[in-house]
Length: 139
Image 1: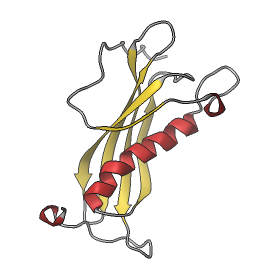
Image 2: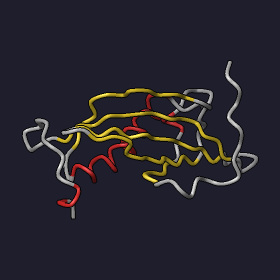
Image 3: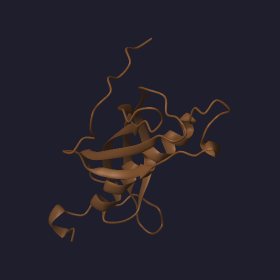
Image 4: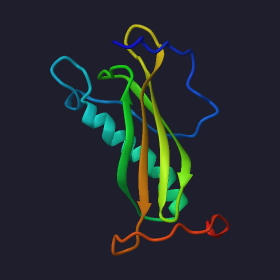
């Protein structure tokens, strides 16, 4: 078993916030633990935001390169997802996503609960890969 992630006193200010969401009872099992698949879908949404901005249009997920659940997520936690582009190719964009939970139960502790590396590909109207626009061409 891994060592628990230490609690933080604040969310990271130096990172780009992509998404904030609070899981509801329908997103969890009978014990109140949020489904890993639900968390994965939120990570995918958060990662797609900077990817679509960089692609200046449609993107599709092509790979989940890594995914680590560091701490459980509970119904009522306020999740903040931070997404940073770490690599681009001709058509692809790799994004590092981190999720932090603000525990809203007894104390207001903040813990890093998930981190992932996800790769997207820019696609055209026919959903075929297309080259990323030059950085100076993005308005």
